[in-house]
Length: 482
Image (tube, rainbow, N blue to C red; front, side):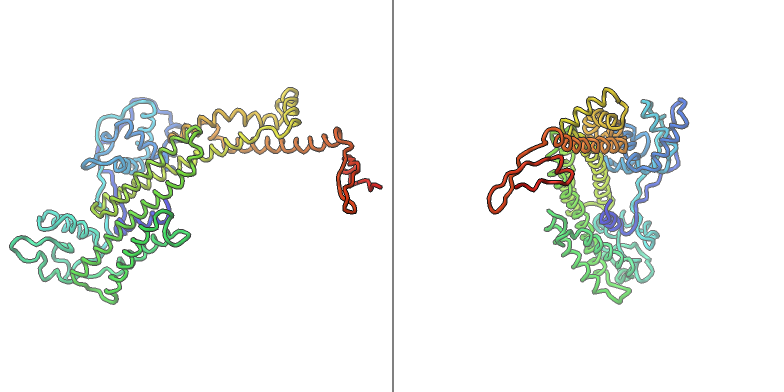
């Protein structure tokens, strides 16, 4: 992921990170089948070293309908949430994941038994970890709105100035016929100055990374970028009002938190719009390759992602998502974009080989005739073998491009695309031989078939004709003429 993406993820998390832990419980057992040890080790190493490989396994588990037999997700998880949980389980259980991958490959379902697996709420910076219990208690109080609770969970502050005797929340609804929800000991709050400064620096870093060459944001997102810059400016002004103070009022606390929360949602939306704009540019470039194998599928996938990211940006900017939902939204988008980008990268490489092999051809008649002759008398010569390798790879490249366009990357790299160095060497050798043959034809044709020609030049302002003895010209001698 790009630098700005990591920045927005940290901002969403409140300078924390996702904590997805597998619980103790039954694990999926490999079937009673002798799994080849070398194959198992290879699979485990691939899963340990490659995020893309782990993602492919997670997709296969979901596609095979095994998700609920592997992990237990709370509520009704989205595809990205299920995939995120599976990625975490695969990473923390490489041996079991490797056996499961081999079983899926062999068409064998794992044994019964669900692994309890929960995606916990995002951990806040260390100052707030001890306040989680009180927040849960506040969540059960009908006088606290879910929105206020969500803001409270991700506040910048270390608790009340009096030592945090009560629930650490920034506001609440007044009960009917009663007084304000806050009593006197909630009036002042201790400001987490370091957290506030990190938040400002992080948001500024994200905006700076998204400035673009014109300084107005990524192409196509200028209006959204300007709106986020304005939000950031308002947050800076509000934060500046607390300069030099360690305690602030509840009103200031709530105002600062609203600025920060609004900026987070806006930054998430801007990040998603930036991705959508990037995909729009990719689509324009891919349109020229739509007729090629896999090209249409890749364009369709890019446009679908562009529409998804644009819609997701609107949801993020609406500010109605819980922080976990926002994190999953941005994280899922980044995973989807990364998967598409790898897919695009593989396709582009295969397309480059295809275009170069198409452009190889024969440089001249002599090149073609010499190739025919050498293919008969010396089929194992370097130039003949190189051209044969390029010609043999052409159908495989078409098939590989089709698979890459559809997202079947492992299959796409099974053929010539998986032998890039070998194909590159063959193209270079065949191209060099073809260029040498063209130079040879030019020389031989001039010596053998153009010994004398009429050369037209000028002398004294009038046309002048003289023989052009090509053989002598090559040697550096030219007749002087009358």
